[in-house]
Amino acid sequence: MTGILTLGNFVQGAELKPEWTSFKLSDQGQMELSFSAHSGQTYVIEASDDLAVWQVVSDPIVSSDAATDWIAPEDDAPHQFYRLAQFDRNAMRLQFDQNRQLWNEQALSSYQYVFNWSCFCLPEYTAPVNIKVEGGEWTGISLVHDGVPVIEKDWKRYKTIEELFDIIDEAFLQDAKEITTTYDSDLGYPMSVFIDYDERIADEERGFNVKLEAQPSIQLMAEIPDAAASDAFRLLEANVSGDLLELEVEYGGGCREHLFEIIADPNAFLESDPVQANIYMTHESNNDLCRALVRKKLTFSLQPLKEAFRALYPNANSLTLNIHGFRSDGGGTGLTVPFDVDP
Image: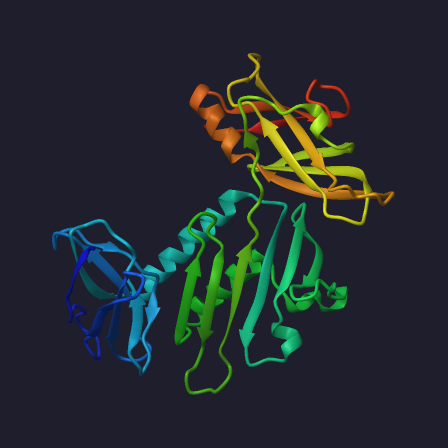
């Protein structure tokens, strides 16, 4: 069990210096810490094992009139020191700019995300929705709880990821009284945001929550499965956007959920200029006996293949993907698309 030593009174110039009020070990073996400070001040918690080098280990925390609780992350150090540091607007702005840049660098054109407003608003306004983006444009919005589509005239209630960044940017420009943000560490998009422009005005504050749905990834296998294990389908279209492979398929069914996977041998790159890789697509119909002709758009992450390619070809930045539909011997439908891999 990691020993914990907490330190208090670390903020200079604050209206009220923060103080640790309690610390205890939870039933799960994690250290639970509480502190009190001036309401509305924003802090981060820093940790050190030698009192010389400190590292931020929390998101920005806005204190309230009541004690603020925080659970320390697991750590293998024999002992750990903690302190509170005031988190100023300049640091928040820098964090915002860095995450906005990180999001822009993803260059995602097709993805899905769950979104909801947090405000004193009507339930139909705050209900969580699934938002689907294809080619950089919204193609569908539906309610999370029952999947019912939102009529297009009501789409104006919601925001793109880029517009959500604009909302945060405006809060900084208008010097809102309180801004609390949490960003996704991998993609940079804002996951949870709360903004209060004037604490003297009741119910004008609002926030939002966002969660991008994880994309299935290409599977790397040393031996490609037998083609007989795949049910029939047609591969209609393929496109690469960033590190995502976007596919459109057609198959018979309509009564059961169908499963598609893409597979590649990480050691079977084809020596050419540019280097080529064969990708095989499998389809499981789950014994769907219906005969409707279904078209579906699928998105897969190419990150595992990208990492394998970089390991073998560190100086190359272009890869040709040969995508085989239905049969692993290269028969059936097939498409070829370029994949630009940053060096």
